[in-house]
Image (tube, rainbow, N blue to C red):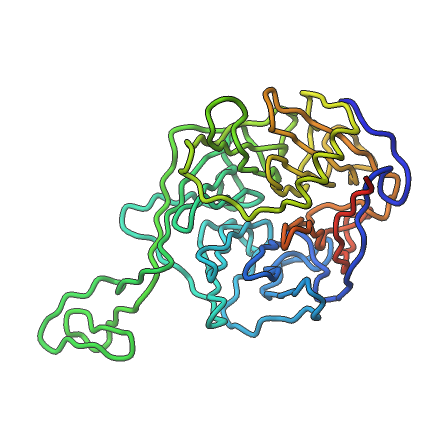
Length: 381
């Protein structure tokens, strides 16, 4: 792959600039999701070798307010999960490791009420046995696409599965479905089931998993990017990067024009990335054997950073920046190395918010110490 020359604090034309530091943010293999202009961090490992993940939720206001721990009870104890924001109100944490097993369960934080809820699978739902180090991509406020290697506590499939997860944040139903008999009634959001005062139906949100017929290569610790389709037919495709030895992206879904709810625009950063890649030489060959890296979509670009490489036995944690440019076919990779070993990260997250790309958490070069810093991507053009 062609590369730009290294140099400077991060690279010759870019770096991660620290903007905040807080011990509450020191974690890895967490989720970090933008919701209502703030960053929501859920779970993760607080140190390398931790026996079980954290169950707390931390909110960071990029405008400069200090990070705060959400006081909501029932937060999911998860690491190696993924999360998506729905309807400008809900934060849905999907799957992950709870310290004992892989899960497919969905827990949702109602940002208005500050409460966590466990959402219930509908009859006919076909959830995976368990998921960890998977991806969960928002297609709309009612549909997510989940991609990863399904498995239980000790075994996993030798291929990757792709699921559509359907939810309706705006609707609730009584569960279990009540049958009104003598003595049935309603009280405080509950219904008596068959008139039995000891059997109550509760108002809950319902979800449904459906396994798609297509499969992917066996991937774990990969990333997913919902990107515009290059060429004359406008649309979107979901691409999977990394998580295995292959350098090739894999398509996990196609959608025509208007079928996908567009991500928030980032005009300033998009323009800067266009100038950055114009300074380099693109290649059709992407990074090989990269996992537990971060990925954020910025307009027609996927921005990947850090991670752990499978291609060498030592010094496996990376600090390289990759930009995947889909503006024309064939799409091209641009690689921008980094000279600053302090920026090595694995199990971190990047998150786009208010036209800035933020780097949050992750283990550093030793693979055990979680970073308490928040940084923004600075491009020198």
